[in-house]
Image (tube, rainbow, N blue to C red; front, side, top):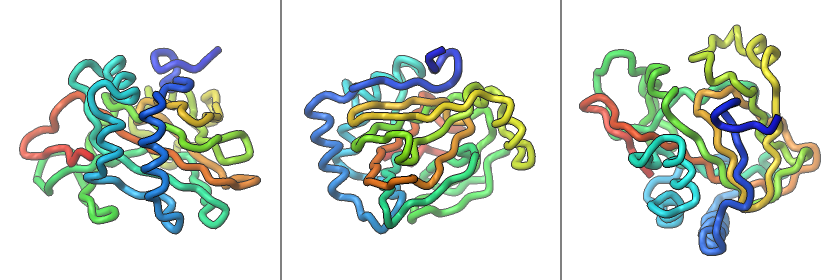
Length: 222
């Protein structure tokens, strides 16, 4: 069965980017520092254009989150032969915010690449969507993202329980061509191996949400 966001928590949208959007993505990809495997983007004009109104990424987010969907965090991954890292099974558990605030169930606060992050309650992550748009081909030997279908329905999974949760789920490799967008529920369990035959694999990953955080917390945005 083909994975879909509604049934399994993940879905591929083939050739989703327009020519103009792909040119923006190429521009963004040329700005990356290959020594940094993941660069958190803030204030980048290209990433803003790729996630604004009428963009392919936001159109997908609106389809599943509603008209208030907006980009709340962006990371550009650049996996190369020199930066060929593996990533074990995990959930994305932090969000990017503007300031530290004492709000029940939010914490601890940390800084990543100078940006403030915090772990929210599961109820926040359950209503978010993550989109990954591909600049380069990503075949089976080039470390595609792996997702455990349906695992987003388990809530926050204890570290000791992750292996069992993955074993009880169908696992899918998120193979992709340039312009493809993979979308998944933010809480889904996912992983990535080191590439067997590494070539450049650049991916723009954007988190979307359609709601405000409890005062005085605010999304940092992109």
